[in-house]
Image (cartoon, rainbow, N blue to C red; front, side, top):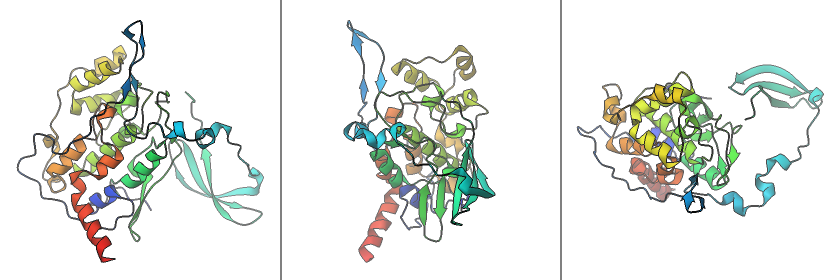
Length: 335
């Protein structure tokens, strides 16, 4: 069962690991937020620049982690286009009732008329080729990244929580894709409010860090009680909303680094924006959810440059989750 707007009593636990059973309290907000980061992030810009006659042509983006997973695995692991699916007969199945819908499909409860077995029938919509809590299973995400897979549709609706068993599940892998360094991917993925800047500026050789931006949007929405945090009316407006928070100086630096240009219309819409400090979003309603660690954590997720964002493994090691790690360690010792 999905829940979209419950109090964030187990936010840290949910974000730390899909199977952690804890209820660590939030730290009380300080009077002054830290002005400088307290958690070091490895700097390893994995970039390669082709050179012809001494001239740099274009900067290729490459993931800082798990970049060569699919290079080392046999082709049959990731080449799903060569997979031969043993399809059943559609006449053997009947729709019982509709149970849900999404942007790309509708889902129905069905039945096999021959065996009376219940099943789920997913009917895809035509697609062009070209809280309870806002929470996330970092352990699951790191695992899927370690297997060479990008989820590409991380959002609250795709996080399910079993409160009785205290388990988290990341669902709906319909837009997931295997990652190959240098490969250009479709930017028409992810739900608008959770689209990374790379998608909005048409950078096609993106990587696992796209999922981390989406997570950052979810986390911002929860701690500031503003969901969605970036509320754009269309893809262009989505970038405008991001620029009004993160500013345009870093956006332009990002575009220059990867040799990208905005189309004139989008450039005019974005204009020139100053970066807004995260403290501007703190108020009486959300201050109990905000701590120096939370702000630092958020700041390391919501970055234009995907190479600078935390990886899932780095996120799990962030000081924001120190209480969760301590409680889990204590729980393991008492088992």
